[in-house]
Each structure stands twice: as structure tokens, then as C-alpha cells.
Length: 174
Image (cartoon, rainbow, N blue to C red):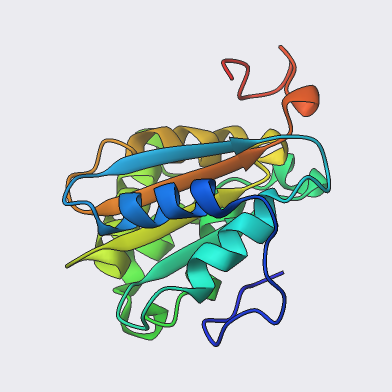
């Protein structure tokens, strides 16, 4: 479910402090990471929706979500995030071709993914969200880790269910 910036009709109860902390991270001058973990239905996605709804239109948001079938689809979370971004119309098509080209090396594809994130989130503060990382393909998880290293005022948010993360999953270090 994508959040609208027009505002939510209901108020979140009991999460004001967490939401304030996320808003401060968006306003920071440095890159930040927030990991939201918990059981299904605890409010991780709702918290992200509230954060997005409270942002001005000038703050770019890339919001990608994994689903149980994405483990076999490389960079699926990034591709979903690109679709969610209103700035994607002006995206240079070359990095997108590289990301989706299975014959290219993983390093080239991750570098192209980073270039896409740079193009869509620069300049100024931005938010990049990878929801349900416990279902994400290993390429998306590797990209998530590398996005955290990009300079600039960017908040990187990952949501996950701790019970879904196992040693056989591509993200076993939670």
C-alpha cells in the first residue's frame, strides 16, 4: 500500500516518539538508516506511510516492497521503488537497462542501482524505503546495504519481520 502525501485520515496512537525520530532523520544533513522490525500487523508500514504523508512534495520518496515471490527476481524491490517515485519519468534509461540485464556482472548491476538512487534522490533530503526485507531477493538486500553508504541527506528505511529471517535467507545478519 502506497502512502499519499495528502495526509492520513486516522491518527497513529502510541507512536509519536518514533515518528518524530524518523522525521528528524529525514531533516538531517547526513545519511541515516532506520530499521523497523516486528510481527505482522504491528504498524511498520503504517509508520512509514505516516512519515511519507507528512513530507513536502519536494522530498523524493522511493518506496519499494518485497513480496514472497521476489526471491527469484533480482532487484525487484528497487524496480518497485522506481515505479513509486514521481521523478522517475526523467530517469536516464541506461542504468535501468544495466540493472535488468542478467548477463551483466552483479557489481555492474549494483553500481547501476546506486546510480538510479542517486538520480532520483539528489539533491536535498530524500527517503528510500525497502519494505519487507525478509522477502527481498539477495540482490536487493546487497543494494540496500550499499545505499546506506551513499553520501547526502537521505533516510534509508528497511522494514522486516524478525521471525521470517533465517540462515537460509539472503539477509541472515538482522
